Length: 127
Length: 386
Image: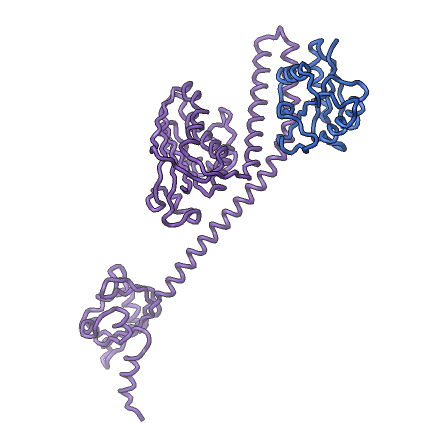
């Protein structure tokens, strides 16, 4: 059974590239959402094994998405990786702060991202 | 009615500006109180003396033909800036005026020399000049800071915007690599070059971000020798690969300064990497750390940026010298400007020294590079010692 990955990123091409790379193996099935609202909706609907979340998005920021997911019992335990061009780890609000190993900076190559996803899913860590 | 001759004598005696009267032989015949006081002579020492004796050697030209011709022609010369020389050899700046008196046969009988002591005026001028210099320096620094801030803001904005497409490109390259498992040599090479280019672009972007972040300093009392050692550890592997020997000449005692350790380390790493990259065929890096009073530092830059230090300050000097290719003269003067590099062919971004200078500036320290093309370069960092 492939692991379900949800990529929430307003850079549509980036979503497409991550999907293509991860789905090269049968281990992953990737869904994508290009804004926060659709991302939250998709997370509730498909209950992914992991979410790859961008921070700087229009309308709802990645931080707000993370906070909403955390508050909802249905999505609270889904592990999240932040993948952003914003290098400032310390800018994360306290209530939605992820550990450093879940805060990744773009550009990231496909093998590194895949390895990180596998590592976190194996650990089955919560948000 | 007072005797007019007494009045004339009184005028000569009491006139406030220095006055001498010289005969046709240019020998001093009358000297008033003011000139005696100004030059430090007694009247009998000055009377009978040739007028040349009261001018400094370099200003004797005032007695040369062109001035004398002018004097003879017009009968007067006015306000020529020159120097009198006092009895003890001191130069006194004066505005010199002179007129001649002729006898009935139209022969010069007397030359009247008036002067105005402009020592105070000159001092004020010098002070004004120095104040203007300081003002200009401060203005330059403010412009520089503004430039840094503007570029920093722009850099961080651009950096974030560039990182997104770079993320897409690297993922795209990875996908093509995976899909073209039976790829030909050319395709493999092309993808490899594309990956390298993404990494290079990312490196430049990261340098820009480093620059924009370099605004906050965490200043602590640190040993510069210790920070340098940390920087050396980071580049040692590169030295081994390039066949470079490192010679460290430091004193055993600590060189303590108030610095941001991480930022200072990044400056030293940058300077060391520049030295390494300047020696593709191997060579030597000599590192010196020493402490000296400001007055004993030979580098001219400490004179240019004097407002960073005070007289008597003890300074720590770090020198990183290499035996590499050196820096062309036309680049040397612009080396600390952004995007100026001697390494454009090998991926240099031209940001390293710009960021380094910004960091050292924020420490109120100095950084400079000296170079002889073909012989090598020397980076100098100067910080105030604790």
